[in-house]
Length: 464
Length: 126
Image (cartoon, rainbow over all chains, first blue to last red; front, side, top):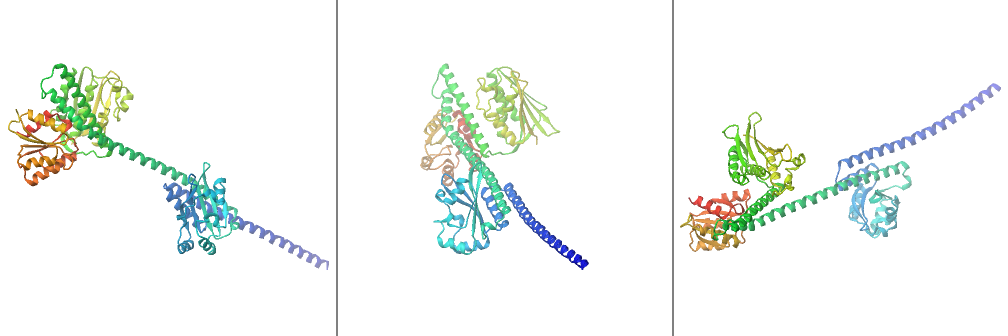
């Protein structure tokens, strides 16, 4: 009996142990299940956030970024709808920006003939529920659709949405950046709010945070783009104005230049030396102005992309010799001597726009004459058969330049050392020369040992 | 007088410029007829004026210089006359268009003095 009792007692003990173990195991299983569920939610959240970050990185337009994001949030979180309102503080308005709907909600809305995205919520401050979200920048949840759309969507439609059990709960997350409400993320689903666990709530909150960053970045990009477009448009207007003004300037300049040349030529009778000297100055100034207007027109053409180039082979040697002969008269007036030399007397063929290259050479030589008070200019043509290049060098004994001047000499409106001394010029000649040479895939540059030590200009073009 | 016995029709809507070229060509021995518009110029030609040279601006109201040259050719008004464009529109495309219309020369006004214009016309006549 005692033995039996002992046995019985052992059995009871074992039974008790077994019950205890079962309950313990059950608890562990429950805990494991719970943890697994949490893990699943976290994994899902992580995957969703990854997708949202991808969109944020790849999409720069705010509307497209928002559309993609609300689509993914709705699908991944099993919502009936997900949407973004943009808050316009001045107008006190929430403007629908992007909405995504489930198939059944879409069908219901179609039946009811309205779209959320068509309904702008004005006078936000007069709607306590929304006002609280924006003012306090806090999350809001409601099961009453009237809290949001009363007076905007008729009662029967709101009732229908409720009755068909699509939108039992609506959640609202303010999209806040730097303490400013950019908008609201809304999520609608067919469950009670209390059925959401903390992890799901956190997951939704994280989504709202990512949307803020993405929208802020997209708006920043859009603002930059808008500003860029505005600048481009202003630049176009400036160029058009410049072109028009230049054309308008040419007519009176033609008259001034024409009449003064006729006065000098005796078409209006004889004038004395003093008068001639004065008229001559008017004539020279007008010529300078004509050249400036031409330069401005060419700059506007280049900047509008309207400069036309007619490419054909020509002899560079002939061009340089002709210009050298023409400008010798100007140089001699200043007491300067121009010399020209080349490797040989054969032709130096170059393919390019003859008139434009002629202007480049003219500008370079004219520039050297302007900045040389005394001494000479040596022009030299060098042929490099190996590299198939032709190089023109223009060495003057002029005022030279500093290293800083060299860096900006070919920039628009750069006057080099001319800005400090009394040398006329628009500051466009060398800029235009560089633009034209660049178009020919050539090179133009300057070297100078320093101020007062002269300069050498180089023009290198491909030979044919 | 280089332009002796030569007749020229100058067309420009800017009276200041028109007077200037008229005087220069007159001083160079030309018989000059001037017109302030293409319509006026066509009238003179239809009335029987037969110039050796027609010097025309392009940008003019009502009818531009190129349209005027087209009308002259269509009507066969002065078949042997040299046609020269004298304009401040100096774009390559303008010059090409002028060439296609068979003009003998295209001179950019602001780049030449009246004496140089006369010289170019004389070179063409010779």
